[in-house]
Length: 406
Image (cartoon, rainbow, N blue to C red; front, side):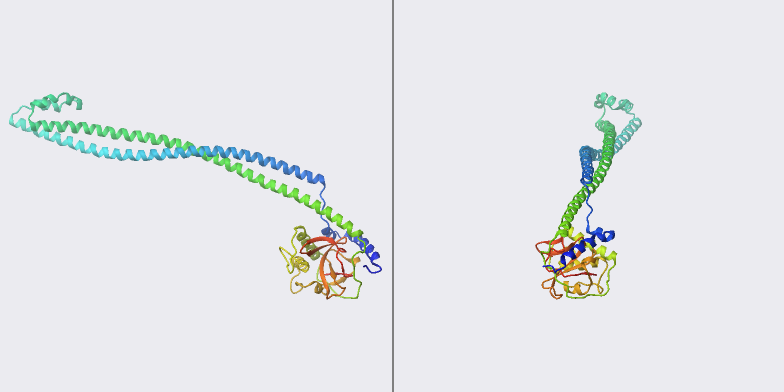
C-alpha cells in the first residue's frame, strides 16, 4: 500500500507534470503526435491516386512489352532469313568461283583447239589440201551457227573432226559457265541485300520499341516508389494515431490510478551526488527506448539489443545509443543502476529518469528498472510474456520512493 501521504504525492506528481510541460523537448518525446482522421483520409486519397497511376503505367507497359515481343519475333525471323541468305550467298559465291575456274579451263580448251585448228589450216595450206570447210567454221557466228554447220564434219578427216568437236563444246561450255556464274552471283547479292534491308528495318523498330518499354518501365518504377512512400506515410499516420490514442488512454489511467500497488517508503537510500547526462542525452535515450517499444521488440533475459532486451538491457542500450558508454556507463543490474544515479523525487521526474522496483524496499532486492516517459508513464522491458511496454509507472508492485537521474 502507499505510505500515508501517497495520495498527496500523486497529486503533486500530476501538478508538476503539467508545470513541466513547458520543457517541450523532454515532454514531447513521451507523446506521439496524433494525426487527425482527415489527415489519414487525405493520405489515403494520395495513396489511391498513386495506386491508379501505377495500374495505368502497368497497363501501358504491358501493351508496349507485348508490341516489343512481337517486334522481337519479327526481328528474329528477319535475322534467321538474313542468316539463310548469307549462307546461300556464300554457296553462290563458292559456285561462282568454281564456275569461273571452270570457265577459265574451258576457255583454255577453246584456245587450245583454236591453235590445233590453226596448225591444221597451216598444214593444209602447205600441203595444198582443201580447208575451205574449216575456214567456214572458223568464221561461223557463234555456237549456234557452228552447230548448224556440223554436217561439214563428215567431209573432214578424223583428226580434223575431233579438233572441231573439241572447239565447239569448249566454246559452248565456256559461255554457259560464265553466264551461270555471273547470274548466280548477281541474284544472291540482290537477295542478300533485300533481306539485309528487311533485317535493318526490323532491328530499328525493335530498338525504338525497346526505348519506349524502358521509358515506361522507368515511369512505372518511379510511380511504384511514390506509391510505396504514400502507403508508408498513410500507415505511419494510422499507427501514430493508434499509439497516440493508446498513450492518451494510458496517461488518463495513470492520472487516476488508486493506491492499489505498493510504493515503498523512503528509507534514506542515496545514490550519486552528480549526474552524467544532459537534456540532449536524456532526450535521445527516451527516443531510443520508445522506438524499441513501438517496434514490438521481444523480452529476452540478459539481452541488450538490438533485436531483444531485458529491463536493464533496454536502459543500458538507450543511454549507450545516446552517447554514454564505458567506463562512464556500463551494463549493470537494476540495483547497481539505483546507486549509480542521483535520487530524484517523484515531483521532479522528467523524461529519461529511471524508476526502480524492489521486492522488499531494499536496494539489493531491486528487481526491475524502467525509463520514465512523462505524465506518469514509462518505457520498459516488462517480461517474456508481455514484452516491451509503454505503461503506468504505478502498474508494478514495489516502486521505490524515488527515481534516478543518470
